[in-house]
Image (cartoon, rainbow, N blue to C red; front, side, top):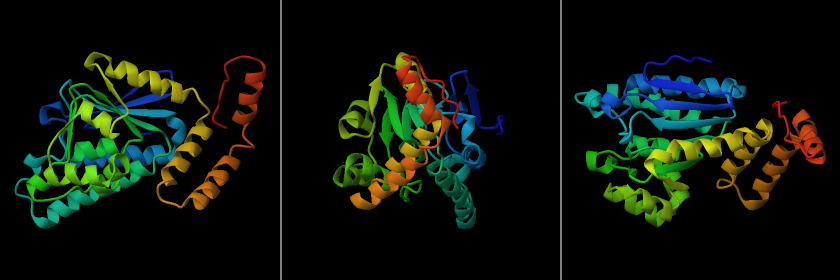
Length: 264
């Protein structure tokens, strides 16, 4: 997979966790066309080769801003056609992110506004620093969320709360976001990445195929009726019966040792 990007920085340890940093601090980590292209490429690579990592952590460069959304300085003066061409790149990136088989954790280290909030919502779950703020500000700019915000937010917080957040465009503090169900955990600023990495490493220590299949099954849970969802779950489950990891997991349990999963 590609490792050098103009707007993203990748950091990899020896624990199967890959950290991706939105790296435009001079522009509040906002998303310009190049970042759209970089993100589209990044997620597509992970779809093509999910063995690259067992868990992805995404965060923003700096201590105050996760991502300010679309780069409005670049967008200023764009024609309708230029705007739509750029947004098509963002749309492809969102769809590629949705298709990513690897668990994704957002470590929201500050403001997540507009498309930045939508980006966090597209992750599987969110840890946030105490000073983080979330807002879908699009209606204050004459547009509306266009990176699955109107789809993910109601699923996270319920339709009435989502209506309030989206239609006012106002910010939600980290503590409120936790109460609403938008985030999973609020951390002290200096402890955010440490706490995220504890969870990421715990996920990465589990059987990779099992993790990917479980993620896929949970993703369809809100899209299907219970019976159809359970049918999908069983299909996903049966994929693991013949794996070496299933044999290793049971063997390790009986031998009272930590399993050594190989993703096969």
